[in-house]
Image (cartoon, rainbow, N blue to C red; front, top):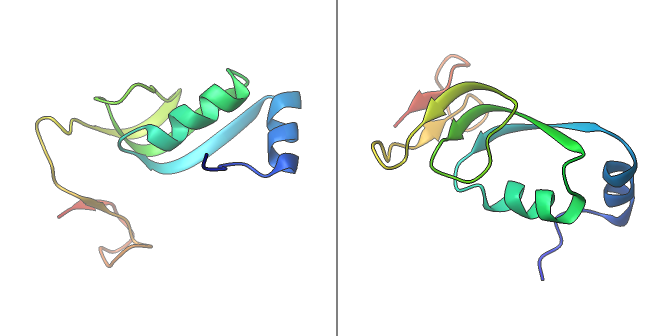
Length: 88
């Protein structure tokens, strides 16, 4: 079984309301695992999310649909695009 959280992180997330910030939620696999581990005491913010996966973030900037568009999203920390997300 893959461990996503350290014991300290798990304890903190179970005891307090937290905001998790992600760059992209694509398949939703990692985020779904976290929600199964810690329940609903977690709000989610992401820059980009794929609406075809099971988790809907409370806050997002850009929504994609992988069924319609398979382009890869590249952020400035992944490649050069003047600091803006781009599709390749």
